[in-house]
Length: 154
Image 1 (cartoon, helix red, strand yellow):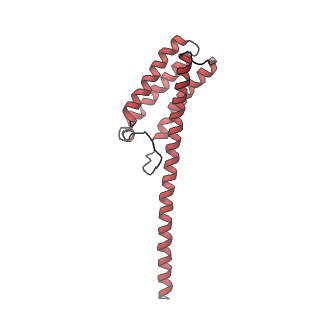
Image 2 (tube, one colour; image 1 turned 90 degrees about the vertical axis):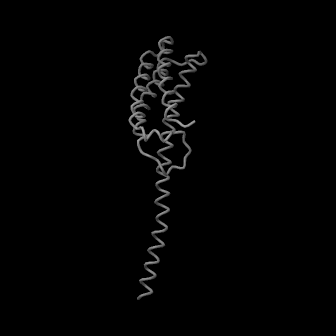
Image 3 (cartoon, one colour; image 1 turned 180 degrees about the vertical axis):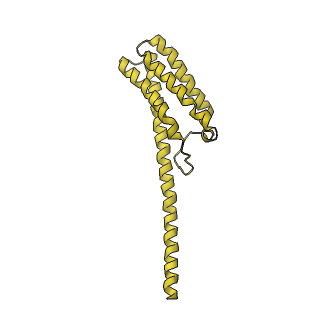
């Protein structure tokens, strides 16, 4: 009986030891997925900005509804970003340029997104008027650069 209890305890310890790495691996997988979602969100903004820049420089042509949708997409991403960034992802192994200051200065970071949304909606409202779009693009660009300068690693 003593050997049976010892074997049972040893089996439980081995099982607990094998579950622990899986739990840690699960945390890493969840954090990696969160980081990948953030990266897609920010890449979407960057892609829209690049396409709008191409249009404003006369390097590509886009119909007004597409220009409007690109700007509205930035506004949508600005709305979604705070929720995407809120979880701390300490166990992530995915490489990221997000600076830890995002979480230590959460209010400063999160409060930037309403301004980004406002600038993007201003861009959407003048779609097709390149002169007005140029000014709106300047506001969008300043907003992006300010956040990158403050909350993105170099």
